[in-house]
Image 1 (cartoon, rainbow, N blue to C red):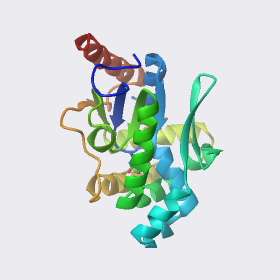
Image 2 (spheres, rainbow, N blue to C red):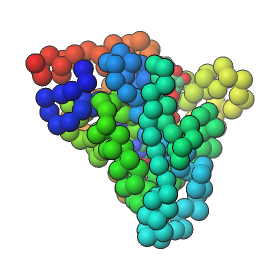
Image 3 (cartoon, rainbow, N blue to C red):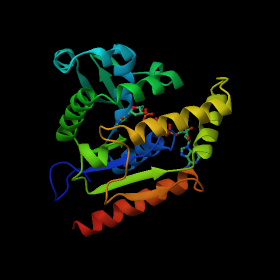
Image 4 (cartoon, rainbow, N blue to C red):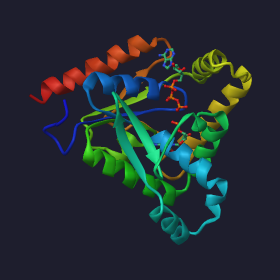
Length: 231
Ligand SMILES: Nc1ncnc2c1ncn2[C@@H]1O[C@H](COP(=O)(O)OP(=O)(O)OP(=O)(O)O)[C@@H](O)[C@H]1O
Ligand SMILES: Nc1ccn([C@H]2C[C@H](O)[C@@H](COP(=O)(O)O)O2)c(=O)n1
């Protein structure tokens, strides 16, 4: 399912709040469809760790100048897709609560959003994608034939994240994770530039009462409906 009768490559978008399962489901769906997976949160996280919160003090012109020296690339390695920032593979260093918070702050800056959205569209012009983030359906790929918006109660998302971190041996308190999720929701949903919201045609899936398999089957079912209508 690499091409679509609509515009350009076949793109599926998955948006939603922090910790709702976007990466887990996008990766799995991309593998199932045989197309690439793009984690746009990783782009904001790597930029935030590299440039720091001080980026907010730059003028628009300085910011545009900064981006001329930056690059992102999506590469297929074995059967996985890896994202590179300035020639270096993005790894586990971005997967911390602190990097998530910093990314959410940097993501409020309109010039940052414009620059990363341009990189994202260029990647979408090269290859069919499952692209996940906050504004994939609303801003970056509004013409995508399948647009999902995942949601779940903050307490459910916090518990899943807590279990994940505990499983990795990281000792974060449940209450701190919940507060972080609530703060990021507030920031991502209420910022002036491209706030988190479902596209008017998005399929909204509340995952609070579904396990990963249940969500996956729901996403596949909708992709099949669209593919059948496209024949
Ligand atoms: N439906 C589900 N049922 C149970 N656990 C889930 C479900 N969906 C995701 N998870 C688990 O929740 C955690 C968060 O998922 P994931 O990292 O995919 O979310 P995310 O939306 O990409 O988060 P972020 O926005 O912070 O990058 C993971 O441990 C994942 O295994
Ligand atoms: N398309 C996107 C992707 C991410 N962000 C911002 C907002 C998030 O809080 C932060 C980290 O994303 P995550 O890795 O948790 O998905 O990056 C955004 O504004 N737009």
